[in-house]
Length: 118
Image 1: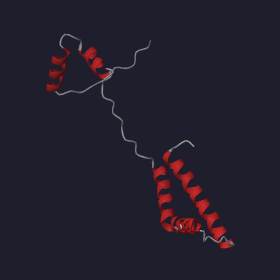
Image 2 (image 1 turned 90 degrees about the vertical axis):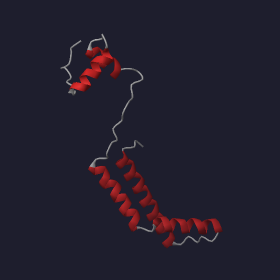
Image 3 (image 1 turned 135 degrees about the vertical axis):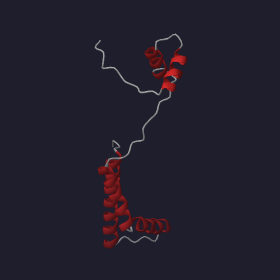
Image 4 (image 1 turned 90 degrees about the horizontal axis):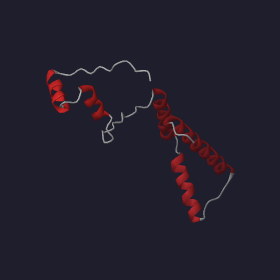
C-alpha cells in the first residue's frame, strides 16, 4: 500500500499539551486517528449551496409562477368541475393545455435545478 503525503494540523501550544495529555502513552498520531476514525465519531455534513445555474433555474420558476394566473385558473376550473358547472369550450381547452404545459415545464425545471433524478 502506498502511503499518502502527511497531513499537517496546526495547534496552539495549549491544544498540543491537551492532546498529549489525552493521548497518554499512545503516540499522538495513533491517538488522533483513533478519535477521528472511531465509529461513534460525529459526522458533519456541509450544507450544499446550489450552484448559480441551479439558483437561476429556481428563480425562473418562481418568476414564472408570479407572472401567471395558472394556479388561480386551475383552482377555478376544479371548483366548477366539482360543482358540475364546468363547460368545456375551445377557450377553456386552450387554457387547460397551456396550464398543463406550464406545470410540466415547472416540474422539469425544478427537477433539473434540484438535481433530482426522475
